[in-house]
Amino acid sequence: MHTVEIDKPQPVGITPDYVVGSCRHQVYRRPFLDQFLTIVGQYYDLAVWSSAGSLYVEPTVELIFADFPAPLFVWSSDRCTRRFDHESHQEYFIKDLKKVRKKGFNPERMLIVDDTPQKSERNFGSVVYISEFNGEVDDCELLYLAQYLVSIANHANFRNLEKRGWRQKL
Image (cartoon, rainbow, N blue to C red):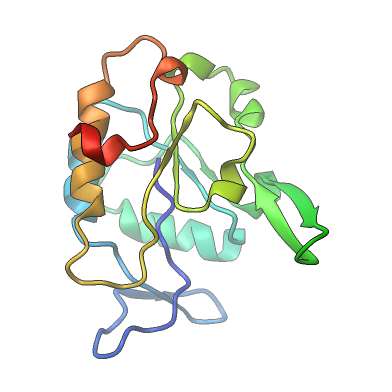
C-alpha cells in the first residue's frame, strides 16, 4: 500500500495531474506510479489508507486506480486514531494496523508503506518507510520499492524481516 503524496504545493513549472475536491487540491502522481501498481499488484492485495479526509482521498484513489483493479479498501482520516503531540502542540493521525486485523487480514502478511514514521508508530515490524515525494520529476522511489516488495513477497512473516535500510538490500 502506498499513500500518494497528494496535497503538496505546485512545483515550479509542473502542472498537477489532477485537481480534486471542493478545495481544488492539486494532485501530483509520483513518477512510475502505474508501473508500481502493475508490478506490485501481481504479488500483493493493495489497499489505500491516508490520513487525509475522505472528500479528498476517495476521488483521488478513483483517478489513480482507474485502469487498475480497485483497492481492497480505501480508508481516510476517519479510520485513523487521533493523537496529540504535547511537545509540538499539534494533532496527528496514526494508522493502527489493529483495525485492519479486525477485518480478518493476517498481521504476518501485512505491510504498510509510508513516508511519515509518526503515522505508523504502532506498526513496528510491518512498515516500510519511503522517502517523501515533493514533486521531483526524477524521483525513482516507486521503482526501487516495487523491486524490494517483489523480493520479499514469498516470505511467510513480513514482521520478522528487517526493513530498515531496504534500499541497500536491492
